[in-house]
Amino acid sequence: DVGSTFSRQRRQLSLQEYHIRIVLFQTPVRGLAGGRQTDARESVRTLKGDRMFRNFSIGARVIALLVFMVLFVTGVVGAFVATIDTVKEHGVTETQQVMLAEEKAKLQVATHSVALALGQLVADVADEPARIEMVRKAIDTIRFEKDQSGYYFVYQGTTNVALPPNKSVQGKDLSENKDKNGVYYVRELAQRASSGGGFIEYIFPKPGKGDQPKLAYAEMIPGTKFWIGTG
Image 1 (cartoon, rainbow, N blue to C red):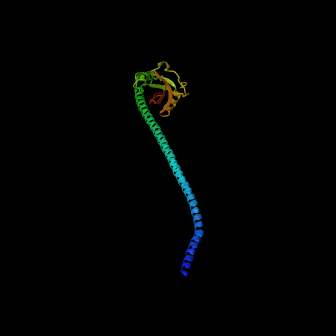
Image 2: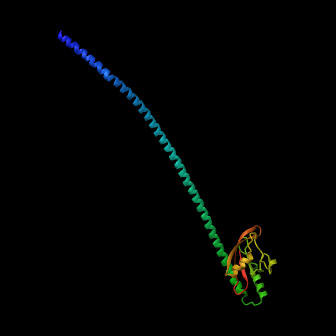
């Protein structure tokens, strides 16, 4: 029967077409699927690698940031401590300078006052030995400082005229006296006095305390050849 034959042929064509489609398309599909699976696996690996790289980079950046912060803070703290030390040193230096200036002012005023008084005291006395005796008596009992260690001394050039704590050297030339650092303090004080007055620093033994740094001032007694000093 023609209809039945046509129907069978059509079914056979459909089956052949189906098989052709499977042959033509399934293999490529499988290949494509396999390729896609391979690409997907590679993509997964790449993605994982990227993630690991990114994670490593972030971790490294965090560590680098932390290290930088530690170094920065350390630097800031170090600079702050150094600044504090500098400020302290500067403050101590300024304090010392102020104290030294005050001490100098005190010595200069006190010495100048006594020099003026002694000048007036001997102004009408022409005899040199009499003048010397008057000067010695005038300063013999003068003491100052809390421990009463302060006193005045008088010289004519480098020859001692009056030295209350050690009267045995009165009348002697003390130009060779020097401290342990080699400072000829009598010579230098005589020079300062003859130049209008001035200060020197040297080392001198203090009763009960041994060698101590000493700041001394000297100036001329008006109307005489004597100079007076203290320290």
